[in-house]
Image (cartoon, rainbow over all chains, first blue to last red; front, side):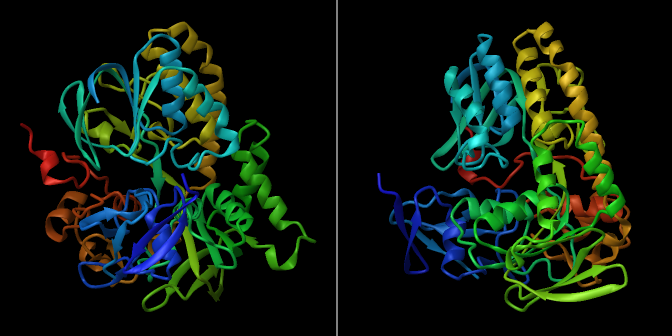
Length: 82
Length: 418
């Protein structure tokens, strides 16, 4: 098993150490707004442990995935909505 | 998932691991289920060296560990439902240990919803799971021993920790420091860091200031955090930063216990001497039964595991350890009690419920959590009040009531039972 995985975030390939979370990968790309709130405010991760749901993104077509609880996998397609 | 386990443990942090180990040692068929992708809970995220003895203990016994599964509902007494990425499963048990841990308490202040304003443990978790923090300017603020541990961790990973702002006053912190001679616990290590930080002669650029009676009154930025305003006495000043790591101590995760009908008191699960809740065959251990730190969580977990295995005499032998650690917990919670000034940071337009964007002014005038929920949708979004619940409890004295299934957002397909 390789020590690194490559995933695609908003169309850009990002290499992360194996075991990294998607939330960390998104921030690494310089994207801080993961989504928009119900009134349109930019939001990013808050709790880092799956409680707050602020870091929701679309992963491989599935909406509302908590990026802080999802481990990066090779070829993963991640879309933020911020 | 499948057949009934002798013991099901919800939560694979220190308390859950200790309970599982003791129960399995004594012949029970044990299953541990946890929401996170790996065992260890929050404090042992990433499996640090000091936790290896416990990971080894779990490996040494026959325990089934299910990661990445979130318990969201009780199907019937003795059976819980958990959702994973691949589907939904039934978890049946004869006895249950609830070791669901704690979360950070967040308090609203202007700008706290900006991206890059995070929990203290929140930012640490992100760094532990791959976020590069080297050279980033971080303000650590809020309350509790976690702040020091987080600051030390971030600094160790190259962050430029500018300041640690602890809202508790110096005289309480001094008493807490003195109290550390009581428990030979891990938590005290965090406190020793304060002395290291404060000591003159440390490298200037890497020495963060620790300020007691100090807090963030406002976060500034448009699309993301750019700076924070700090308050200490009559002094008020602004600091530019990349991240604000801000949490106000911890609150127990009691939602599953409440769903199962366990009584709570003072915001934590009520247990007897053997860590048994008010529901038969349901035990609880660790932060869920009151914030007390790692060592208390471990001993409570061991007691719960032994009691569930019917080894009450062996459990009794651990009572003195628990007494000692509870004294420390009491001191901890007195030390980091929140000051009233923090209730008045928000303006009428400040958002309190982040899921539904409910502002402070929309909550004012309501008489209860329930009334506010019905009128404003506060606490009715995806987090189900886990973030704003701790805030409104502090701001208005409202306690969240009536946990209903599903406890968390789940896929529709998970709710449809054949």
